[in-house]
Image (cartoon, rainbow, N blue to C red; front, top):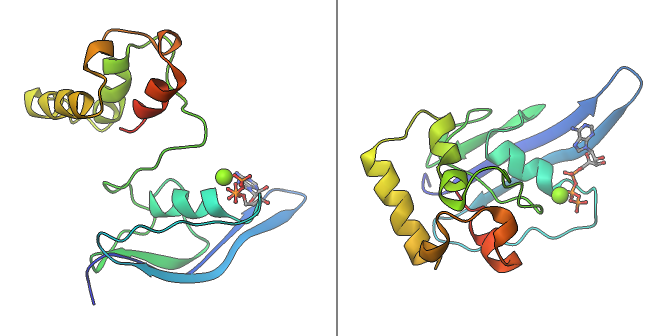
Length: 147
Ligand SMILES: Nc1ncnc2c1ncn2[C@@H]1O[C@H](COP(=O)(O)OP(=O)(O)OP(=O)(O)O)[C@@H](O)[C@H]1O
Ligand SMILES: [Mg+2]
């Protein structure tokens, strides 16, 4: 079956000159399209590492990540995730924070700006486009990190 996200034998070991930590050991799983999955575990069990590998922010030490059958291991695809902290840039407005990912990927154009504006409208942030993170409630701050 090719639809969805498949992780095959993922392992990740972080190394420095003095020590090494195995964050993930031989993890395999298939997330089918439209499925809602929670990854639960104690602090340090490798949840964030796994999400970073799926999003292409970290390369696994071993294993492959397949999206709809295509190998996307270690590449930045169109998968993102929201961190525990919002990490908004305080000197940019809500709108500019939301556009950041597009800017970095050199994808800013009228079409993508309109798409972002529509998303902001959908999530109730239309009235906050020109506000700075410090001017938002916690709920609105969390919402505008999803970009
Ligand atoms: N960049 C890194 N360099 C070295 N070790 C790391 C690095 N990132 C994570 N680790 C280690 O890998 C293990 C898994 O960390 P990870 O952040 O994935 O856990 P987590 O399940 O997300 O924890 P939490 O619930 O606290 O967010 C931990 O032992 C952590 O110290
Ligand atoms: Mg984490």
